Image (cartoon, rainbow, N blue to C red; front, top):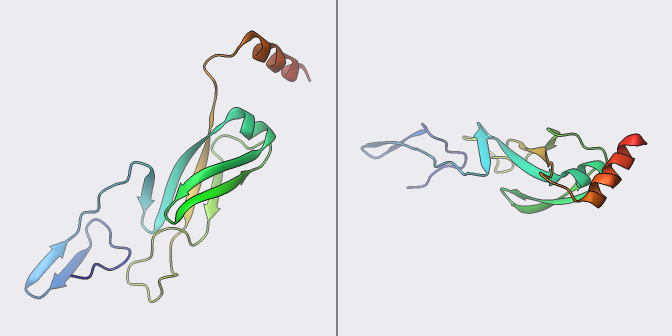
Length: 124
């Protein structure tokens, strides 16, 4: 049985005398909404402030994502056409979008030196 790209939970397929209904297992990292995929990805607060790079998993493998200085928690990055192939599409290139929601990790404790530097930063 050939399963069409983009099949989701509840998709029905007729095969000879059988009606098949699919149930697609969820992935703990990715959340699917139709053909779009969402991923929450944590970055350190220092990277959010000064910028840098983050390696992010996608459906097509890891991606190096440039983080701009001053990135705010909850920033949503859209990768157009990098989601799930749309069901009954005439082209394998007809895909939903992949969204990366950046969450910022705040340390639970800091050293005395780090605290002094942060207090100095807050004054400027």
